[in-house]
Image (cartoon, rainbow, N blue to C red; front, side):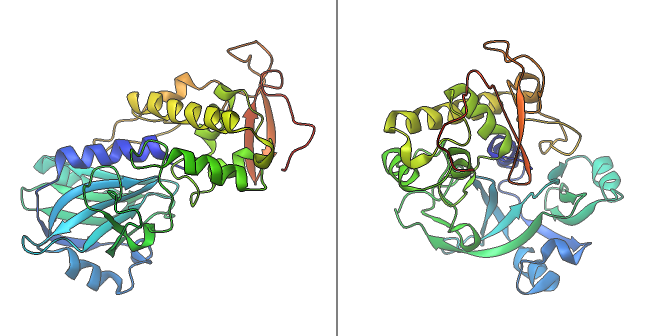
Length: 307
């Protein structure tokens, strides 16, 4: 599933290619892809046509485009969750617009007033698109990267700020992590606690911090929690510099280009290969119906832990 660096790469592409454009037509090809929009496909179309795309914003793995009528302050946004395989692709040339219309996994198409098309493509159909009202942020800070509005779409209101958000209260986050009675990786994956971290970057951050995924959060020192948060933020910044992680053609930016951070992964998906730091074979453990990768030597299993 795309994590923060992959979603941020898409957000940045939208900010560079479609902002300021107005939606002239909407085609919903699969109703299931707009299942979270209460009014269904017709209402979604009605709330998009004629609206201008004012800002592309992100919090964690959630992406939204603020909609503007040119009058009062914006009060709603187009929300996109990429799910397992969702893509937002900008078709720039007339040939691309025509060719994109035949894509077998095209779910929602938005035509723009400059002739471009913005396509939501989703092979596995776990992603979704909706228009949702904006609600104020409790801390009165901007809702997410890419927007100065102190608001987030209502479906995103329960999502915590992410590690790259300048409005994140890092000291308060450390306190919340240490107050949990869980394993540190479970805490990192809790999107209501801190957003944007998935399996890949959790494993990579824990490896950089030299912490086992099952270390109990309430037994960690503040310095330990700060170290793993810093390491996870660092690995995501490194991934952003390379356009995110791509294991197949599903994870692409708005131009259809893949990221290359998978070539820099230290432990994720590298079972049996030598740890880049000490040479010990990387271990894979079953974890929450998925896998967890780490170095048995650099990240020793705790004597007391919560799985």
